[in-house]
Image 1 (spheres, rainbow, N blue to C red):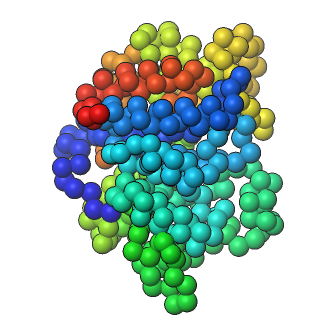
Image 2: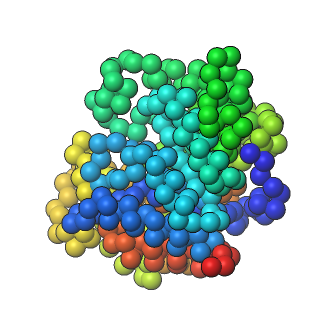
Length: 347
């Protein structure tokens, strides 16, 4: 993956490109089918607005998130769009066979050449019981400890260098590959392999700067990347007034609390959340959730994103907006794009 100089941010890092992470949220009172339909609408919307890429994440056993199968959803989103890069942010490699991942993403790259991103993570993206079910048995091959071996096999399938197996499609159809992480481990691995790195600032903001430093210090040029390229995920809630943004942020905060308490659920309405009496422990969880959040009016969001980009010196920001109302979520991405002066794509 060579990133052209024309796509790199300005030297002052004030205006890196913006991308989108869509978790396909399932609000209370709606269906999974509706949520997936909204993801298609969102993909077309952010493509028109000028966002660079759209990623979907892998989560399992979460009633409020519909993106359990990234390659299936990516195929649908890529077919519904024409210019925006579409990818996985990410595929949790320990849950899968490297051969299957190579075949799936080789096929996606063959169908949509030059538009597919494969972001790889080593966490399960779910609870231990579900992770065991995905791998058929506890401790089955494909755990986090096997991650380096899985990566090596995946590279071999795309390169066609495996001694006995040819991935078809896969060989000769390598998508742009990223490593994802929330710790120093993936940062160091991405640097050593010469891959772009995406850090989960949206839920591990306390380690963002340290991980980025590790990535840049450990980076070695590769056939895919000549110099470090770092992106961070940023939770953003934007509305026409600060009070409206705070109101719309309630469901996402409540869903985070439920997840941390082991009770994941569909996202409630902001009206329902406003009537909820939070306990002191829940308020502390919300304080943690709020730490990386960028929230407010377009001008407020713009200034917060500029400050974050300057502080982290990242090459790209990936915005994730979780709201109950689909129209409110679409509006938030519109306001951010306008505030960031993204160049709209021609219809």
